[in-house]
Each structure stands twice: as C-alpha cells, then as structure tokens.
Image 1 (cartoon, rainbow, N blue to C red):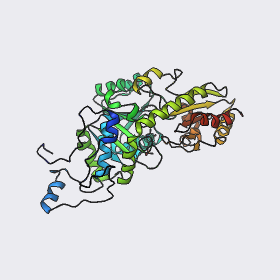
Image 2: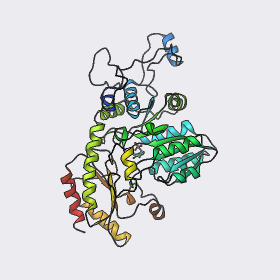
Image 3: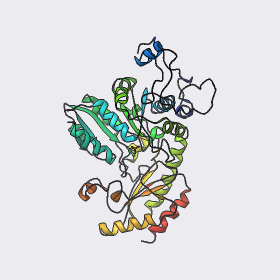
Image 4: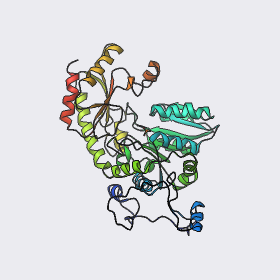
Length: 410
Ligand SMILES: *Cc1c(COP(=O)(O)O)cnc(C)c1O
C-alpha cells in the first residue's frame, strides 16, 4: 500500500506514551456512538458503500474491514494494543498460542530450511516443529536453552529461525535474549521468543533484539482462564509480507469474542503480573525453607542459576510460576509424595493452565510431560517429585497453608 492510500484511523496517544497508558488506551477510535468500553464486533463480513470501493478494498488499495477471517475491528484493537505494549510495529491475532507458532513456521519456512530451537520449549511446539514441519522437509536442532555456545554451534548455512521460550516451563530456565539475537543475526536468521510466562508487562524481547514474539493469549494476557487465543508480534513488513497472506489462505483466525476478552485482559495485565509475581516470590521463599522440598526453581530467588539475568530481563520480577521437587528416596516414593501434596490442597486447582487469577497446581511428569518417555523426561529435568504451581491472586498465607498441609504430612 502506498502512503496516499486510505489507512484506518489511529487513537491519538502521546508519542512517548508508556506501557500502562498504552495497555488501556491503544486500539481504534470509538464509533460514532461514542462507546467508552471497546466494542465487540461479532460480524463475519463488512458492507461496502459501492462496488468500486469494494474492489479497492479487496485490492488492498484502501485499508478497511472486509471479512473477519483476516480483519475485524475488535481483533485489530487487540493487535494494536499488544504490539504497542511489546514495542513492535505490528501484531497478528491467532486462534490459539499453537496457531501463532504454526503461523510463524508457515510464514517463514520452506522445505530445506533449518531451525534451532530450545529443547525446553512447550511440548506441543516441539511436536509441531519436529513432527509436522519435519514431514514437510524442515530440519530442526534442539539445544540447551541457557547455553549460548550450543546455539552458536547449531547454526548452519540454511538456518532461518531461532526459537526460545523464557522462562521455560516448568523449570523456569532463563535464556539471554540479547545474546541469542546476536547469534541469530550473525547467521542471517531471525530470533523468535515465546513471551508467554512474562508477558510484555515484565519482559519486552523486541527491545533486546528479538524479531518475533509469540503469545498464548490463553495465559496471562486473558489472565482469568476464559478463552483460547494467540498472537504473533513483529515488524509491519514481516506481518504484511509473511503472515497476513498465510492467515488469508489458512484461516487460523482469532475470534472477535476471544480478542475482546484478551483486549480487556491487557488493561489489567501489568498490575496482575506484578501482584502475582510478588505472591510467587513470597511463596517460593517459604517453600525453599521447607525441609520436605529438595529443589526449588524460581528466577526471583538468588538460588536460581540465572537470577541476575532474569532480574535484568524481567523488570526485576521472577514471574508467577514456581516449581519444586519434593523429597523421596526412589522415583516411586517421590511421585507418591508429590501426589499427596497436590491432593491435600483445597484452594489450588489441579489443572495445567497458567496465567489464571486462581492458583493452579500440577504434576508435570504425569500431565504436560506425560507423553515423553522417562529418559526424555529426565533429560528435560522433569522428575517424579516435581510440582509446578502457577500462582494466582489468592492470599499468600492461604496458599502456604494449602501446601503445608500435604508437605508437613510427608
Ligand atoms: C500454553 C502455551 C502455548 C500454547 O498456547 P495455546 O493457547 O494453549 O495454544 C505455547 N507456549 C507456551 C509457553 C505456553 O505456555
């Protein structure tokens, strides 16, 4: 589109507006009705005043809403708000976090290309890359998330993309985003970061050199466990040239209703992330002092191997996910102990989601990582005694009492 072409109007915000202002104000201007809360446009198509205008809009000569598979005002509001919060020019909403990752791969890769991926990314991401895209001739190498030299050593002439997720789930491994961006760009590749666990409220990978940011909107962006949603943030050029055409033909579109829920969730993202991180820190400190806890993983504590890096990269906060291993002399005993702690809770919900205001508790070895072999699990550091807690907004003392019940009975 040339500059003379008609563009969608913008919300008038100060050029230097900060993230908390952007989070409640960025979007599209109100309709002529003057609604204060953003409108939910549940419509599949949009009407044109005449045939010539319709032709211009379909030829991309005039920016307008056409069909909700690829453009809808509520979705656009969510995309603009999230892009501005991440500090990228553009964003494209998707039907789920996994759809965002599929769009990333479909938009950037072809047969014969190579991807270097952290071995600690979300399990479905590994299955999608290695299994589905492997089937189409995309090569992949998996490396230790925290070992920059391993990323560099895995680079090949045909490497197009590096993919990391920081902090990782459930071990909360933190990678150095700026160092990985340097490795990627040195080899003519792009760096994508799954920013699910921190969200832009704590961590803005684009400021550290990442080219693409992936989100599962299902997690902290919604923040209350209501909808499945996803997004991919990048430059306007990447979004327009690589991802919009795939969205138009493949249709992994974000529903306007789910976009609206995420849009409103973004307004409270920053206060939720801060409050949940503070509660997680208090809970992690308490857990670390319990004799029944063998190991604890939380980037907000000095005992975490990448604590200093995490504090630099994540606005001084550790995020809201705490994992720990309960003691046990054998894997069977450790598993029984972990189950006893989980089953003794009355406040925490036994469910695998994260990013909810309700605290969730899970046993990764038998749920999220249950499809792996025991050897694969051990290589990934997921032992039978491990418990993951995604801290919500309940009172920390109630959460402590909830975990103490099981821990102190061991
Ligand atoms: C949940 C999750 C995803 C997948 O998102 P969905 O919305 O469930 O498809 C991807 N990456 C991370 C880190 C996640 O936690």
